[in-house]
Structures are given as structure tokens and as C-alpha cells.
Length: 187
Image (cartoon, rainbow, N blue to C red):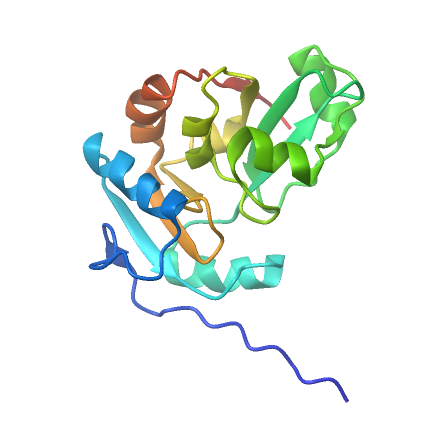
């Protein structure tokens, strides 16, 4: 009988960055540095690698913000790339979005493009990685429900921590700094 995996979540969310950078990846440290420099407050919870929706639900119970799916997509020709943020309980159907953004045949972008363009690995897709998109090659797409929510939940570019950030701060401070303007869609 296979051993059941236990997913561990720190039960105590913390305001701001870790006390020490020991054991953190450079991209996680850079995320905290950028948020701090922009004066954006955030609550953080650490956990094991969140690889499944079930894992994310456990994090949701601690951080108090619903799951936000972050999908890295591209058109068939791989000439246009998108980061879609939608509520975790909404299914992703390409037909619901393609006409709203003027693109057809969307699919998940390959992992090598995710690494090349945003310095991310699968499972860690995060709006925080748009700071790496210096050429604005990735179009951010927000589901209206995310756009109108009080908080956004995202990873600090690695899926062993989750951040709770005011949506207003993302829209008014973070996105202008990284030179990205979202397209709002209704899914």
C-alpha cells in the first residue's frame, strides 16, 4: 500500500518577508525586495510544495484568500504569451476567453518558455514574475472576479510560500512598476 503524502502548512501567517534569507531562492528574495521597495504590504504563509488543488485548499484555510489559478498560455504559433489569473473554482475553457482577447487556439505554454520568459517552473506561475518580462512579451489577463476581489493570492515565484496582497496594490503599484496593464475578461 503506497504511503499517503502529508502536506504541511505553517498554521501561522506572517506579515512581510522571512527574518532570514537562508534557504530562499534568489527569485523569492527579489520578490520580497520589490514588494518592500514599492511599499506593498503582504501576508505570507510557508508550506510544502503546493502541487495539487488539495494542497492549495489547505493553504487557503490558513491564509484566508481563495485559490487563484495562474496559467501560462500561448497561441498555437507560440508568438503570443499570456498569464491568466482566475478563481480556483472556475474551469478554464479556451473558447470562453479567445474572443475576448482576440487570439485563437490557446493552450498551455511549454515549460521551457515559462523558464525562459519568466524564470519560473511549472506549479510556480505567479504575477510576481512579470518583473522578469522586460520586453512585455506576456500579456496579463485577469478574470473580473479576481480584478474586483479585495485580495490576490500568489506565490513569490516559488510554490513553497503563498502571499496575500491587496488587489488595489497590485493594480496601482506593482503592475505600473513592471509596465504591465491587464486585460479584464469575464469567464
